[in-house]
Length: 143
Image (cartoon, rainbow, N blue to C red; front, side, top):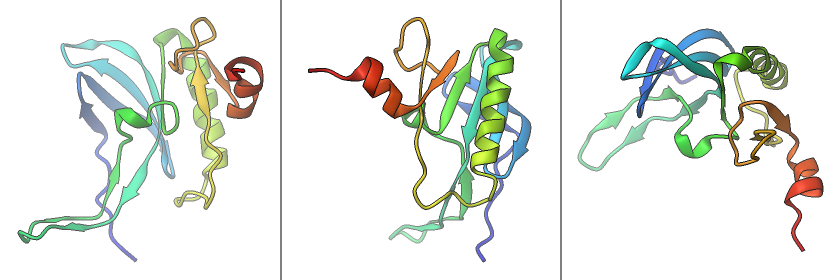
């Protein structure tokens, strides 16, 4: 079995710093801070951690197999953000994902979720989680 480099407890991505609070299998619960203001809690992040296999380049450079924090383009499917007041919702979502992905390996055909803010529905996962099909049936269906 391949040895994977474990994700560090503090991750800096863009203007954010994510600190690991709890992790179970391939799902993590993080506190999020702004890099310019690291003392004030900016929110919470629930993330599905993925694994990347070893990469070898033609010039001989090798990047070892590693765990990977979701990129910004995976926001809403593998990474969800909650405001500081929504800690209860963030923990509920974290426990849902832990139950769904309790093994260290993702399922063969995962059912993806999209999150939407109740007020604006622009894709910010700050308050509620909607099943993709129910969203399409009620809000996203266009004729």
